[in-house]
Image (cartoon, rainbow, N blue to C red):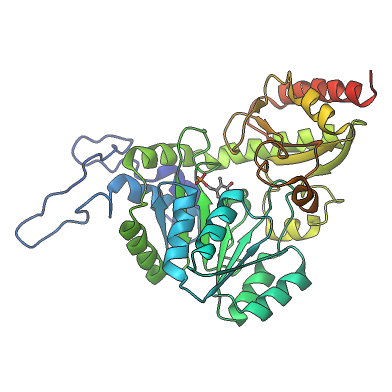
Length: 392
Ligand SMILES: *Cc1c(COP(=O)(O)O)cnc(C)c1O
């Protein structure tokens, strides 16, 4: 039989590997320490901060899905990002990152740069000329890419950015949280490292905080594992168990997220209360052709704008029954968020406006419920928004 596909390897990670009892599902190894086989002869695992069988099974599955040499599992997505920054950057070196990257990433980049750990240059990496100029001028040691962006789902060209970054000797890192390895494989597009908030789609059930750094070479995987252990940010056994349990169904879940999102996009694009729909599946989206080339899925996040502004957004959100008003994304359940007052509330209004975030904007994380129920729930919300918009 030929080598099983990445999907099969993720579904089967650690399955039927228990030699003691024949447990089909691998047990959770909670032990913090492991015996030496004999004097001077350690086993594969010695201390659980450094290594743990449950964490290793998850790492192997994530690495298989990304087509990677190895992966390091961390306690959160921010733990993964911290590991990369600690391993790669030192004072005087430059990190070039997207001006509209994930808020938590921005906060960490900014806070460490203010302490002199490295220099931070923010640029609009969706604009090829701006990106080229920033990379040529600043010669970054690390080039950070996040595509699609949040909440506008703008697309950056990973291959082009990887080439520009490599030309100046940068390590190119892609935050692949939104697409997952089933939607986009950045290492194949030339990136050196991938980071994930496994809290989102990889674990997929909104019940575990977890992260991963995925590496294109074994040497890199060893170096980053050394740093994660040194920093103390490796993932806990129970969290790894939950994340692996979720990851087994990633391909099945992503297929439903994708098709449900397509139906939601259809509802939104035809609706008179809606003035804009942001989803790369739409030919009108500025990144449509690039996304069609670089992604295998357009994804389950859909952002839209209501003509009636803030009152319309509130009227739409209030009373939705299947879209819970909550931050985060990527779980089996549908969520709705109002970026201006929730995820991006820390930005002053002018900064929000410059980033394209409007008071009437809502972001959906489309879950895997029955599509007809989601469409009916949102249609009722749009109806309420339309009434506010009409002043009735
Ligand atoms: C959530 C998120 C993170 C941070 O991950 P945590 O697991 O919350 O620490 C990083 N990047 C993106 C794109 C995210 O959505």
